[in-house]
Structure formats: C-alpha cells, structure tokens
Amino acid sequence: MKLILATAGTLVFAATACAQDRELTFEPTELRGGIVMLTTGAGGNIGVLTGEDGILLIDDLLPGTGPQVEAAIADFTGGGVPRFILNTHYHGDHTGSNDHFHAQGATIVAHHNIRTRLAASDEQDAYGFLPILTFGEDIQFHMNGETVRAVHVPSAHTDGDALVYFETADVLHMGDTLFSGLFPFIDLMGGGSVDGYLDAMETGLRIAGPETQIIPGHGPVSTREDIQASIAMLRAAQAIITPMVEDGMSLEDVQAANPLADFHDSWNWGFICTPRMVATLYLDAAGDTATNPLATRCN
Image (cartoon, rainbow, N blue to C red; front, side):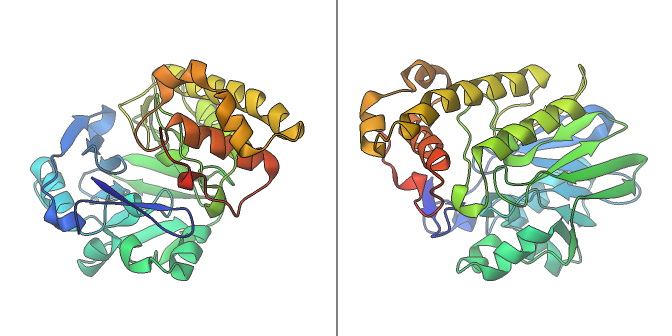
C-alpha cells in the first residue's frame, strides 16, 4: 500500500497507482441492531445501517473503490444504493467513494467544514464528491427504527469531525477521533489539535455506556476501556513533550531524546510511528500548524 500525502497534511490511501487497481478484502462484523462494521485494512472503517428505509453508510473508503464497497455491502444488504452517505471527516480514505455513490443517487452529508475543505483542496479529485447537505453542531437521521445522531467535535482529528451514535442499538462510530490501540493521526494542518482530540475522546466517553460497541476510524471493534486507554496515553505523552517545548528545545533535540520510548512497543504503527507522534505533540505545543509532522521519517 502506498501513501500519498497531500500538501494540506491530509492522507489518501492508494493501491499501487490507483485504488481501483487493487482488489480489497472486506471483513464485515455484525453489531447490535443489524449495524455492520466493514473493514479492509486499507482505509477507514465503514459503518452500515440497513432496513426498509434504506441504507445509511458512515464513510465510504478510498478513491476508486466505490464498486468494491457497493459489492461488499450487497453481500449483507441484498443490494441497493445507499440512501445517505455520512462522512465523519474530509480525508480521502473516508470520502473517496462519494462520487461513485452520488452518481447513483445517494445524498452526501457532512459537517460544513468538510465541504469547505474539499472544495478548496488541490486534491479534490482524490477526495470525492462534495457533500450537498451540511450541518453545524449536529444532525439526526430517523430511519430503520433507529435514531442516528451525528455530533460535531471541533479541532479534533480535523476541524470537521463528527461522532455518530446509533441510540437504539447503542453503537458509536468515532471516525478518526479514535485510532484504537494506535498512536492517532492528528491533522494539525487540517484544523486538528491535541487538546481538541482529547476533548473528542472525552465526548465519546460521555456518550458510550458500559455495553456500547464502538467503531473506531482505524482498529478493531472497541469499548469504553479502549477510549480510556487512548486518552491516558495521549495525556501522558503530551505531558512529556510540552515541558520540553517550553524549555526551548528544538524538535531535533526532542526527537534525539526519544521521549516516548515507553509507548513505542504498545502504540507505534506504520503510519503514525513514534517519531511522527513526537513531532505532532511538539508542533502542537509550539503552535506550529504550518509544518507537517508527516514529513518526519519513521526509523
């Protein structure tokens, strides 16, 4: 899998030259209320609600993968075009099939800032069709016997994130405000921040009960305990890096000190490796949103 980094600090996952050239393997996990979490290991986790009122899709994967997503959901829905696509944020591994489903009649829904960022992006073709229905603080869908509530969490992973809660089923899709068991990607250049990311996870924690099934943006089906573990890790890491910034240390000096060594074995992964997490925390504490932490090399 190849990573293409946009100039704004966003990411689009692509397979070789084009995503459509790669045959993805979809793994459906049935949750309560007939909600399905659909994963591929190559892009964000999809949530699917089906029923007589139609299909609601939470995110829609990579550019060029629309036909594959459509075929995958047909395996457990019996076919049909999604009535609504709800994007949790603007990154291409969550919005990449907007154009495919819009062409078939789906309504694309997202926070105002998602449309704004997609419309302004030089990489718009990679991110997919613009949402045509946008919201500010929240929006609700009433379909298939379910109330689905999307709540905006500001300055978190980006500036347009939404948590999506299926109230009857007690299932929460957190988008990329939860990388379960992994260092998170906090898109500082896309309006995200460490404090906002922590606040978003705290919001998820307030929504989730002891039995809530949680769909992270990346990672397996999760629980409140997984959110708590991510909060504890990020707060502890922030508490290590921020004083180093306040003491006037350069990013190079902080990296050389390897301050997150104790977190490496448990949280490091291929995209947000430990040096990139250090860079993210450093740049956030320094108020530098012009430098891309993804430019940091992984060791």
